[in-house]
Length: 91
Length: 206
Image 1: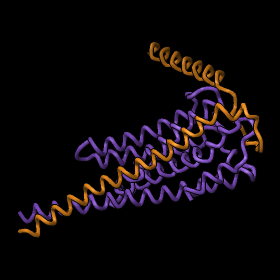
Image 2: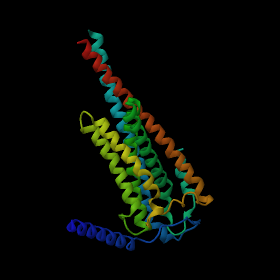
Image 3: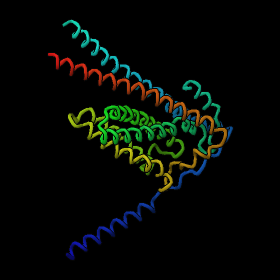
Image 4: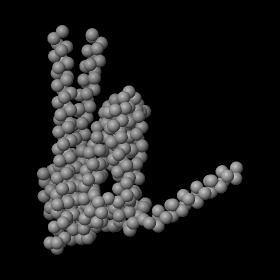
C-alpha cells in the first residue's frame, strides 16, 4: 500500500516538475497584430524572394497534381463502367 | 479569382517586421482555415455515418479527408518557408505547428485505413475522423493558450485595410477552390459506388 502511495506521489511530483520546466522554457509570445508597411529596403527583399516564390509554386503544383489524380481515377472508373456495360449488352 | 488573387497579393501591404515573406500569409492562413474546415466536415460526416449508416455521409467524409491532407500539406510546406525568414528556423515543435502536424497525420491515417484496412475500415476510419475533428478547436486556440512563436488568432481579425482585402479575397478563392475540389472528389466517389452496384448486379445475373 505504502509503495503504491509513494509511487503515485513520485509520479505526481515528476509530472509537476516536467510541467513547470516545460512552461518555463516556452518561447517568446507570438504577435498580437500585424503592422502594415508600404516600402522595404532592397536587402530585405532579396533573400525572402525565392522562399516566397517556392511557396506559391508549391501551392499551384500541389493543387494541379491533385486535380490530375482525380481526373485519372475518374477516367479509370468510367472506363471500367463502360467495359462492364458493353459486356452486359453483348449477352 | 485564382488568376486575379496573385495580383491583389502583389499590391497588398507588407508586414513591417517580416517584409516580403509576409505575403505567404495570403495563401498560408486561408489554406490552414480550409484544412480545419475540411477536417471538421470529415469528422461530422463520419459521425453521421457511424450513427445513421448513411453512405452519402461516408463519401463526403472520404472526400473531405483527402482535401484535409491536401490543404494540410500546403500549410505544412509553406509554413516553414515563412518561418525560415521570420523566425530564422524551418520548424519548431511548438503547440500550433505540432498540433497541425498531428491533425495532418490523422487525415493521412484515415486515408491509409480506408485504403488498406480491408472490411470494416469504413467504421474504423470514421472513428479516427471523429477524433481528428476534436483536434481542430485545439489547433485554433493553441496560439492563445500557450506561448508560441506563431502569430495569435487576433492577427486576422485585426488586419489593417491594406492587408485585409487581399487576405479575405484569397480566403474566399481558396474556399471556392475547396468546394470545387470537394464536388469533383464526391463525383468520383459516386461513380465508384455506381460501379460497385453494377458489379453486384452482374454477379446476381451470372
